[in-house]
Length: 217
Figure 1 (cartoon, rainbow, N blue to C red):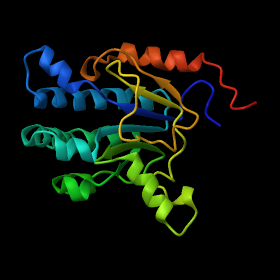
Figure 2 (figure 1 turned 180 degrees about the vertical axis):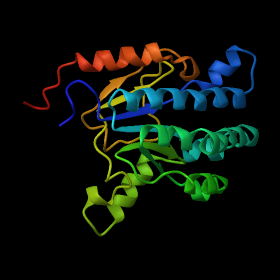
Figure 3 (figure 1 turned 45 degrees about the vertical axis):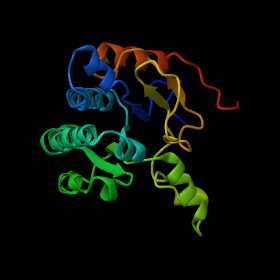
Figure 4 (figure 1 turned 60 degrees about the horizontal axis):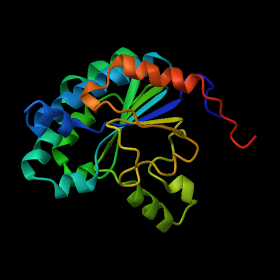
């Protein structure tokens, strides 16, 4: 059962990077660069606050195959730089392992060396969803010969206690973590992701801590 005060598993859809950049006359890549920097800030604050698993989505297969090649290059390149230059210290400072789930080896293989260099041991976890579509995960598990739930790519992760999607869009995309969201609290704050501050995040944790959940009881 989820902790009553702090989410064990916090998942984030960091939406609004392009809109944030457009409002400032910047390029989409500038927006994604600002966005991935903020991922590190919020991930650090989350795990310091007692979150055990911090998951974030950085792109669906559709994002990587249907957007302009220049933007796709920016999405991948700023993530690769962050994985090499920021993620190692972030993981070591928090005693966290790093995991990646999705079709990244197929759709953005340049990430593999940086991913392979990241820590794989730790009680806490930072989980990147890259080239990930939850519908693909469910379809593949349904085709498996084993038990459905244990065949999910995310079977080893705890249920999501709190999902935050920034940018004010009260909707899901590409079936993000559908199975793990079954009993989650959902939040759709207005700030675009690069403008989602530590104060905003702390307000989300405070709201979570004061929300009573019965879980069918």
